[in-house]
Structure formats: C-alpha cells, structure tokens
Image (cartoon, rainbow, N blue to C red; front, side, top):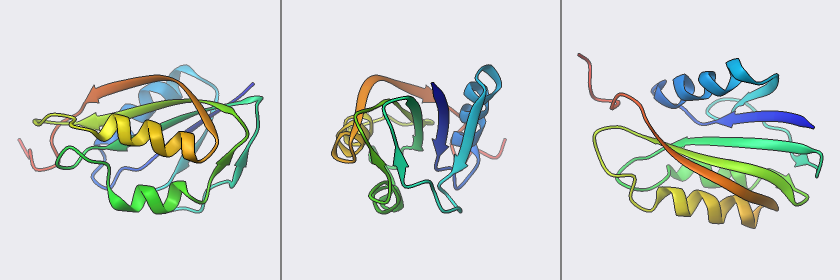
Length: 120
C-alpha cells in the first residue's frame, strides 16, 4: 500500500501537523498549497488529506485543487487543522469533497495548531 500525505498550509500550521504523520509513515508528500498534484490514486493507495480551517470552513482553493484529484475508491483519512476557534463544518465539508472525488473516507480527525494570527 502506497501512503500519500497531501496538505494545504498557507501559514505553516497544517504542514507542522502533516510532518507528524510523515515522520511515522514512509509517505509521498504533496503540498497542494503550491504544487501540481498527482491526478489519480488507486485502491492500493491510502491518502491523508490535511487542510486548515478558516471561519469554520475549508479554504476555497482546496475545492479547486481537490477537483483535480481522482480516487478509485481509494482509502482516505481527512484531517482538519484549526487554532483558537471551532472547527465548524470543515471536517464534514472535507469528507464530502473527498467522497465526490472518488475517495473512500474511513477516518477523520480534528487537530489543533497555533492560530495563524498568534505570533507569541
């Protein structure tokens, strides 16, 4: 099984959480914040999607970039990362978006990172 970690992290908080997963797994890593992503994953892959939460929602660019990826009933874990505010509907949004793109979401998590405006 090929492990893939795909994250969107404009301020670095989500990347820090992704690195915790990357350190424990032998994963391919894709930063959907800046790079072109692989377009297809198969049933033998597992994909970890990590995205930040802004105002209880996932960022709009995540929708655009996720639509470029296609799973073939590919197992997936969705993780939303938030700081200093509720996660709102972001986890549900990410689960539904991944399912629309052909991924079989079997696990989800909400993780906490320092808020993007917290400079202390």
